[in-house]
Amino acid sequence: MGMRLKEKYPDIQVFGYARRQETIDHAISEKIIDCGSTDPAEVLPNAELSIVCLPVKVVLDFVKEHAHLWARGTIVTDVGSVKKLIVEDLTPVLYRRGVHFIGSHPMAGSEKTGIENAAPDLYNGAAVFVTPSSVKHHPSVEHVSNFWRAVGAHPVTIAPREHDHLVAGSSHLIHLLAAAGVNVALQEDKSHLAASTGFRDFSRIAAASPDIWTQIFRQNQDELYTVLEQYRTILEELQDNIKNGHWDNIHNFLNKARQKRNQWYDNWRNVRDN
Image (cartoon, rainbow, N blue to C red; front, side, top):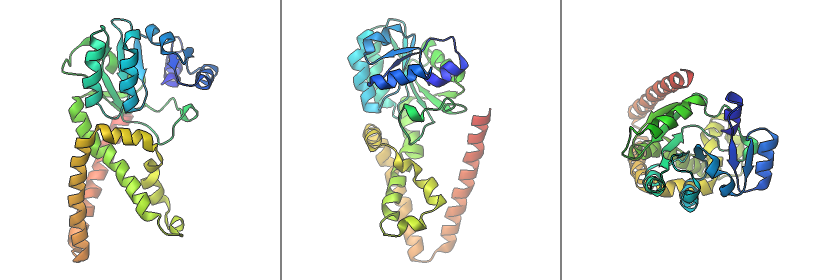
């Protein structure tokens, strides 16, 4: 985010907070931020808009602990993968101090972590869910949406609960399936020889941080359980069709998935290209 802001708006002042001084020093030397600190008290009071980029559980603890540092009238958003709990917990905490919290979730990312893997084009063309509480028309909502537009993303305002339902199927379930596929496929000594480009693409997100993803699953437990039940039903149907040689059913299943995937890809490209 710092890279993108300094790239597009070199005159804007970007402050940075990180746990390690080495990260701050690197970010300053690479002109990712103008100044920064490992002490939130030296950073948060200066920000008109704060973007909290921390794991979902840490977002809650960090904002509650440092709520008193933000100036009245400022805006705080985040990039967490789960929204209902974050929005419900943090909106009233900050509102009592005259600070507006508007949740965000950019549908962009990588399995890699750390400042060394940062990229200024990460948000280019990405959809970003903006998830305010019940006050959907507050000026701060438009302010956050305009911010995401300014860095090249496409903001979509949505209720936090609806967001969590959508990403349970499109993101959280897929991560579990990738992990399950890796654990099943790589059981034999020569499995790595049989796993090629298809396996590489399918398994990519299984390389992501288990600490972060366990937190995500925990905070979206109910929605994730629901989609897992749906998936188990489909697996049982597939298993029955394969056992009994119902290949027409298998063909129809694959064809339906192919059509849906192609339609999704066309829509996804339209969003990212416009």
